[in-house]
Length: 141
Length: 399
Ligand SMILES: [Zn+2]
Image 1 (tube, rainbow over the protein chains, first blue to last red):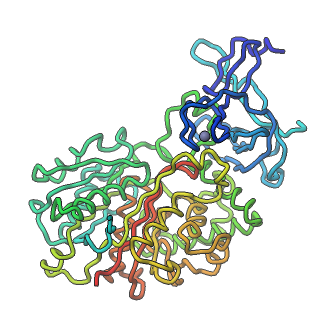
Image 2 (tube, rainbow over the protein chains, first blue to last red; image 1 turned 30 degrees about the horizontal axis):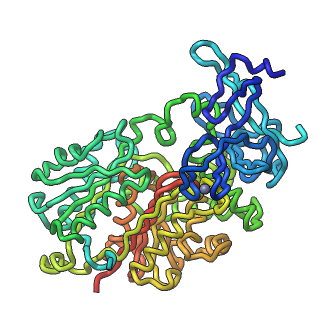
Image 3 (cartoon, rainbow over the protein chains, first blue to last red; image 1 turned 90 degrees about the horizontal axis):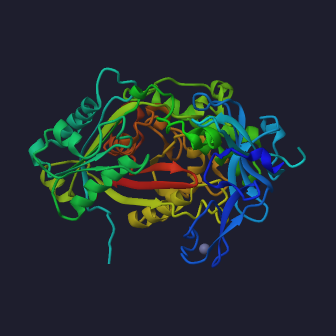
């Protein structure tokens, strides 16, 4: 399946595609205080250490921490959708869109298990290359 | 050893433009409208002003960079004019500059003017960042309502509050502000709304509906400051002085999450505590007469009642529903109508908040006048829950 991501452009800097063609969310861990961040960092925002940040892959499962259902957004953005904050297993917190669940607070439970998926965003860059994006879906989906 | 700002600076005069859809004028005229009122209130002439601060946020759609817009518009006598920007707390920053200049003894009289003209952008919210890759694909939830709405779910999770109960409480916040704004001829929105209207309004970002969000407006506000001694020598009565002026900025800890649960403002708790220490306030719940907070959204105001150490943690729901913060409550909140009814012309808002506290302290708030207020607090917030600039100022009677 790895080849299916070939030629796609990651939509944000912290979404990466490795040498085998597998996408992942890049993270960093501070060697001094242990704090985990999403994205690449050289300085720890928790303890300010500048010497021990290590690149890592963030986990692809987690729990729904907080959310809102967006009903009005910027021009061209399809609504409604669930904007979620997810606590990833193994550390790190990430915001993103939660798919494959009804955008209704009655269907959303705090701490419900979710997983990260990587999909074509449906939009293309100026050279016609599709953007690759990450989303969350319920763990069972 | 620092001694704080308390009673070192007096407000000599203030002014505030009519807020609203000001298609009839430009940002320069808004500045003049606020400044003219402040100048008359202070009883001075422009040539007596020795330093000025201009606060604006969106230089791209407003008056541009630098202090030139203020200097040329008011024909200031070639004095230092500084433009400041610190997100939505910009207005408080301008005021802080002027107050510090007087407190330092660098000048006798300084002025702060805040202005923003947003309606010309034609957009319903704040001017959106360009619809580039990150904005459109990944972070369509990074709209201001989307960002602040998550306070609600985090608060519910933390305190075990039922969704409907929280919705009713934040609706009460907006109903109260509209009732106050209806009595204010300078407010953008001067109509009362019912609880049913607020509860049933279209949802923007769950649980925030249309009436849980402040509007977009044009406006300007102005403060002229001096020392209490000079104010007294000028024959001023009912002198109002600055009791505290604090600013707390996020330092990255909220974003790293493990010490912050997303249900409150870390900075507001720190700024408020420092402000109470600076003002010599031991028990804010008993000592404050009124507060004017940054109600960009009803949920922001709601959690801020706890962050200011007035409602106990988890106790905002009861206080709000009990009417503790209503116009006739123990501590009136948004007695002028708040951002909810004034909208949020960014550079102006912090000074607009101080304007109402100043009027109230001088007994000049007309139909909104509270009985004998002594201390008023303003809370001006820039940025989102996880990274922000939070100003807390306290002004009160000088004795
Ligand atoms: Zn660290």
